[in-house]
Image 1 (spheres, rainbow, N blue to C red):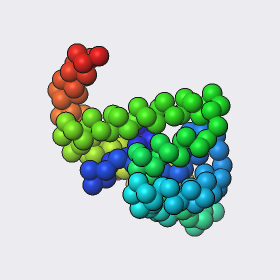
Image 2 (cartoon, rainbow, N blue to C red):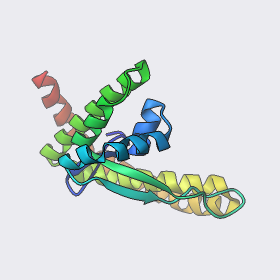
Image 3 (spheres, rainbow, N blue to C red):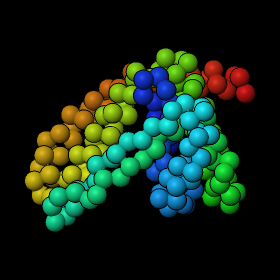
Length: 175
């Protein structure tokens, strides 16, 4: 599953940053549209917001935090209907629908435990790599953690492999 749709507490959702990036819109404009249509979005489920910490700056400290809206499948689908259909937006709509269906399939098949472990370990590895690129000390720390994280990811992938093979075979049989 891509980073486009995330599953937490058995609920699939995306966020306003992913929609802004995928459609080529500025994040502030996507948030403005969400706030403008909040009454409609709340009818699907209460609209949730989250503040993401800013990225580390080369001179030290962090960039400003970013507020993002967390959108369920229904909320994201409604929001996407409000956007103009440029070729980039149409492709993103397709990718988003596909990601939500894949998330739903994963929830139904019980594969989320391994998928979540894989995603968490992969994100941890990427976070450590990002830190390593910021400073020399981070590089030394990353080198110490890299091998164990990569080994843990490979172990989870080996556990996933038989299940994913059966999942893809069953999926192809349906279509």
